[in-house]
Length: 290
Ligand code: NAD
Image 1 (cartoon, rainbow, N blue to C red):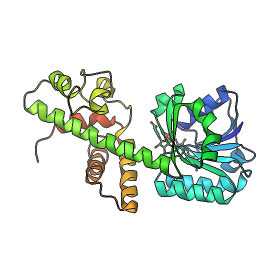
Image 2: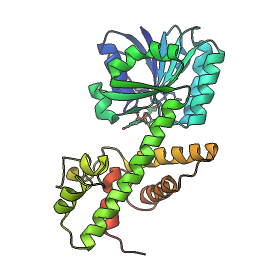
Image 3: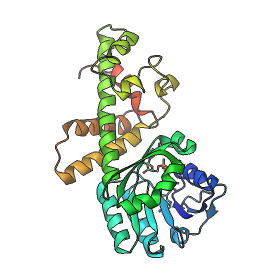
Image 4: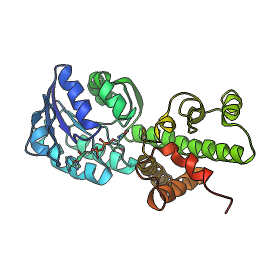
């Protein structure tokens, strides 16, 4: 396929490289002037999109996605697919899909999980929203860049799945970290805490697979000085998107709201920026009740 790839950052560059490796003809564009081996560099997003069967975007946020979409949609050939893999707000995802469809294009919102490691290894999970025809067109590319692609529903459903998952993740990480900090103050050994909780009703992915306590459970960023992994500021971004969606859908999400406020404090007023999101544990450890 002829593929236009817009946004060649930490995630986009290795994803584009995997498409090249699989034999696709990829033309890329990034405002930072990033180049990727095997990817033809275009002078603009519209140039990268011209004549492409599929245009993939991997951008920082919804406002940038809307601006890029306004530029590439008129340049694309009818019947081609616009596949956005960025994590953005549901409203932007739906607005871009509507514009693309009005121009005779197929559209998929397909945010990913798996981080830069998954992007490099080609083992991402894609959660996709859009028509069946759009999903079918993008699926062979998802299979190259990832190991699983779930068609979640209509436009915006991929973003909805992503932010609901990450809202659970943020809330659960905080609960796990505050429980460890309480256990410390009660004189409970962390290994014993892990042994009990990981096999009891308090178990979770954050406890069992990504334990925030160093030296306990499987290897995780806690064992590497809390170097990300998944950075606290990215968790904050996703929690804010969940609260923006909750506002617009009139959903009551008190735990998600509390998690967003705590990560905001951690990233913006404390030393959380650049740390893994599990570094909530040393944060709680240092604090008292007030
Ligand atoms: P990044 O900042 O490394 O990459 C974004 C790229 O977009 C940058 O290279 C930037 O120069 C480029 N860009 C910005 N505006 C542009 C424009 N108008 N035209 C063309 N290029 C433009 O970010 P990333 O880590 O690659 O993440 C990309 C998206 O994937 C984000 O939405 C993020 O939330 C999501 N995501 C990231 C991870 C992760 O672990 N990094 C995991 C899952 C999802």
